[in-house]
Image (cartoon, rainbow, N blue to C red; front, side, top):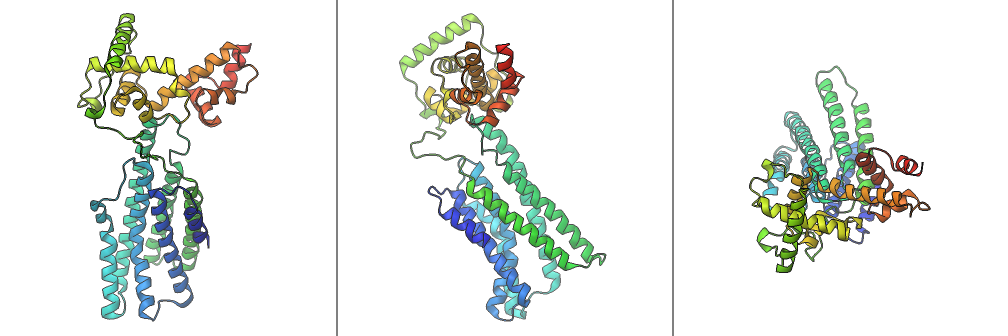
Length: 388
């Protein structure tokens, strides 16, 4: 019932992304697994041919959970994730296992215990490998988020990492129980079944609760606003070039351009030092005059479009000139804006959170973290010090 209820909630979402459809298929597979477990628990291994095939499909479907978990994670964390032909390779273990199990049913009425034991070990190894890979992927995703977004609420996917570690823990417990059972030191399968059922219920509840709430992180629209264009498609008009050159000359004359950091990551970038300084000048001027950081949903893509700069180049300029990622760069402007507002005295009757929202923050937690990291004190301490 829990799986069906969660599925209905997903189906009821107005804007369903690819991740939602993958999630629905994953829930459907879990539902089939649950139905099969109930059948086996009540009547043992089925006598009817259709029942045997259902059981074997469920046995083989364990090989699908790892790939589905991976596809779901990629659909949330990769901007350009699409199903491609090479991803069929992930389904080969499932297909091979299902073929052998079905042939066993057709030829001899079932598969012997040696083959089942081998499949059990292989399935556990597959799930462990996929889950470990997903944890690595989520660690990389965290860094990617801070290179693209200025606000990271609900974008780190920490709940998926928590879920992955939970699967690893359950895997270790199950593997230990399997080893002890095979060595006859521990022979209480009912306790193992109870533990497995409890873990499964918790697993379904967790992915259901967070999966329904989770929106697509890279929700690209058809207008191309968030797309990374090839460098030769980015054009800057002549008037902008003239203005930028003048700004660059002023900045160079004042000798306040942060020294670019040489990084192997950008050795094949194609962005010359002169062009980098020119773009840096335009970025500085735009940030000070237009204050785009006050937009709570500002991303690397939208800022690059406003500046007519390729997003990769904008990221490179921020990384090399400021030694910061996009997230820290934008939030430093926001924090400085908050500090100026508090020092001006114009906002003495406003709450700190109200001032933070005016300057581009979208939550109390992100505001407090960013302010403490950049200013070295909490917002309350800063206001108290300024009014003392």
